Amino acid sequence: MSRMDDVDRALVNALQDGLPVARRPFDAVADRLGIGVDELLARLQRLLDRRMLSRFGPMYNAERMGGCVSLCAMGVDAERLDAVAELVNAHPEVAHNYEREHALNLWFVLATETPERHAQVLAEIERESGCRVHDMPREQEYFIGLRLAV
Amino acid sequence: MELSDTDRALIAAVQEGLPLVPQPYAEVAAALGTSEPDVLARMARLQEQGLIKRLGVVVRHRALGYRANAMVVWDVPDDAVEDTGKRLAAEPCVTLCYQRPRRLPDWPYNLFCMIHGLTRESVLQRLQTLVETQGLQGVRHEVLFSIRAFKQCGARYATTRKQEDYRGVAHG
Image (cartoon, rainbow over all chains, first blue to last red; front, side, top):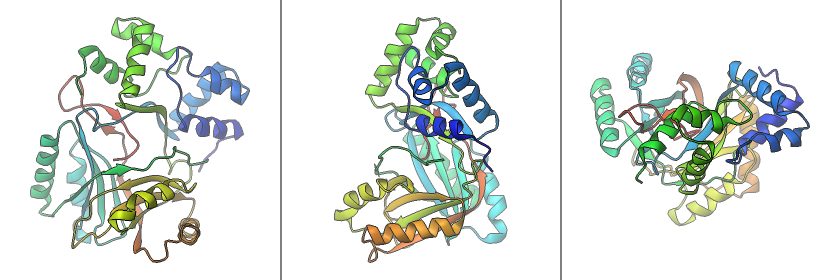
């Protein structure tokens, strides 16, 4: 459970909106929060160390870089789910992988450098698991700004 | 999109996160053997070109206590999907909203959004409010709660070395 104080919360909310590319990118947020840059950086480091935030940095647009990202779904028999999840995870191109409540019960994000590699990994996973993989690339993102208010 | 070797080195240098110092780009520049203004210009260009969407944090929902994570999927008529997507994305409880292809007959849904909450009840309550306020009662939808996270790491993209490493993007 979260052990963040009000300043931590304000910091996370501010950083979710993104920082400008600038020589001193943290100054404006620190000013807004009424703390020094050193304190801001110490708090940010602590949140990362406690793994409440996964990283601070650029969010890339994989498709623009020539890469390929899709959400993939498989329907796996319950008794084989752990084993199939493990063989899916063994591919370094797999980012998130979740069990979800549905006939399609295994959902993972596949991110590859090229479309060719994408098709190759999908085929490998289908062959290794014996299960059909439904590949659902993003066709459109509706984005208003990330704000899970914490 | 053609990237120079220096751009690729820069992307590789910052993909695990920016150095947490007051002038992070000066540190990145030193590591790459270039100048701070050069790194800033390259970063600005990558952002203009849309390769970098933004600089920010990725929140680990579970670590923050948001244990209920629902993927809500909708079967929206094709001519209404953009309008519905924009309206869903504007709802405060929706963190991500994507249009994806249907995979018939197994999968009839073409609009995906994520709703996080402290409990399943709170997620379902938010969803019900959303359905009512947005007038989506007639749109077929399903809620897929996550049961287990088998893997949770940043997606990796292209790199100076083939087939490895580029971190970023909150979700596919």
